[in-house]
Structures are given as C-alpha cells and as structure tokens.
Image 1 (cartoon, rainbow, N blue to C red):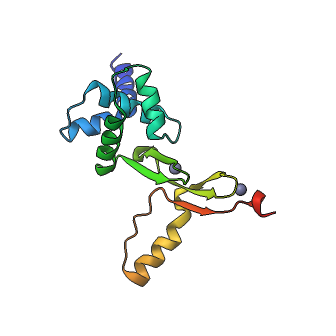
Image 2: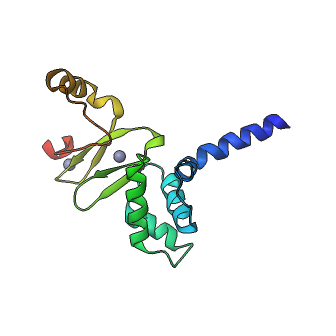
Length: 151
Ligand SMILES: [Zn+2]
Ligand SMILES: [Zn+2]
C-alpha cells in the first residue's frame, strides 16, 4: 500500500512540476496563476498566451489576459518556460521540463517543422571555440522555405 502511495505521489509531483517550482521560489499561487500554469502543462507541446487565456477563461471568467502575460513573464524569468516567436504574431510557450526542441518555419506556407534539441550542438560548439561565446540555444525558430514550397 505504501508503494502504491509512493507512485501516486511521484506522478502528482511530476504533473505539477511548474506549480511546485514556482511555489518553492516563494510565489503565492493564486487560483488564476494555478490555472494558467495548468493550461501550459496540459498543452501537448506549445501554447500561446491567447490559448492559455481561452482555456482559463472557460473555467474562471474573471481572469484578465494581462495576468496571463505577467505569469508568462514570471515563468520565463524563472527559466520554467521558453518562448519562441514563430512569425506572424505566433508566439509560443513550452515548459522547459518537457525537454528542448527547435523549429523550422516556412515563411511561404507557414509550415512548422520540429527539430530535435541536438540540432545545434555543432553550432554551439563552434561559437564556444571560436568566440568563447556560450550560446543559449533554447527553442529557436529558423525561418526559410520548406521542401514543398521549394519544389
Ligand atoms: Zn517549440
Ligand atoms: Zn512551405
């Protein structure tokens, strides 16, 4: 029985990773903040501020979009989410705990191709060796035109 409880706890802990990390850094978890964080964690991969707002407002209609933006700023500051501008006003958020990745964005058809986080290892290494520069390559978007648009 204690084993079962242990597993439950682990699962819950994993699920509320962002929430507990925020709480641990001394932030008061208001219901609005909790719902915003939940919406981010429940998103399969990415979520925009507008999508977060839509998800929260369906449960709690007094939420303000500026609260969503402020909470996202806070999560970004704490390094708990990464922000990427995918062009055309599409700004996307991704929880850091779910691993890193990058994107190729086609400026012609709008297609977004996901890249593995290892994609820029060589670039990072070159920047470090040649410039002594430690690049913070998290969640990059590279713009160009895709195979379909090029053929
Ligand atoms: Zn992404
Ligand atoms: Zn394309």
